[in-house]
Image (cartoon, rainbow, N blue to C red; front, side):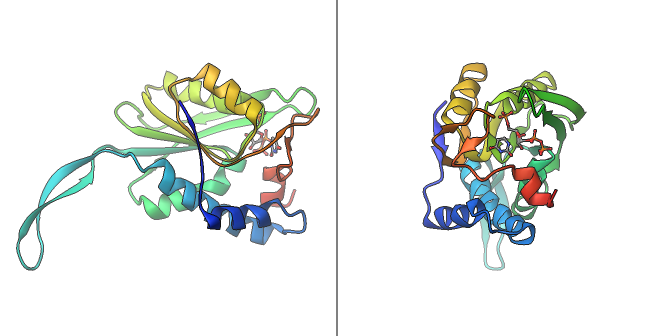
Length: 205
Ligand code: PRP
Ligand code: URA
């Protein structure tokens, strides 16, 4: 599936301040909210709708409502920084959680938590701000598929070319939505130029 990169001046503005090492956690959280809101709207552009008959104060009409339940799955812990706008825009959204942590030496993700609602027949959005090697995202997508998800997208704030390639190889049918596509990974598997460790900057750790 193709990679969709946000194309909006506000996305560039917000990303610039997110990347700036002088940005403190309180502003970092607000900026994460703003870019995730743009991503939430973009990643749900293709949601299916069904017809519904209603009456306006003036006359009956046929209108449309969302057809399927929506489930958002943040990858703990940094993915929590992207969750709130999905709640705000889609009040009926269900939330599942996947806990993954990269080993500092090997950069291989270890799973420590998984709690998912029913996913069969739902539209599922797995969200994690950083797509670096792609190991965490690929693991999370396998977990949601094992739990019955068939319509899944992946949403991130910054992606690396290596992570996109790895994810497209492991889950070729899954669309990827990113706020930015950066240059490369460094030898510690951090995204360059990137924004550093998202979880640490979000939570001030
Ligand atoms: C970060 C990030 C992704 C992962 C990306 O999480 O939030 O989950 O790294 O790297 P990958 O594509 O190479 O797997 P981290 O493991 O640092 O955990 P945290 O969210 O608890 O900070
Ligand atoms: N995780 C992060 O938080 N940042 C990176 O650049 C790579 C993985």
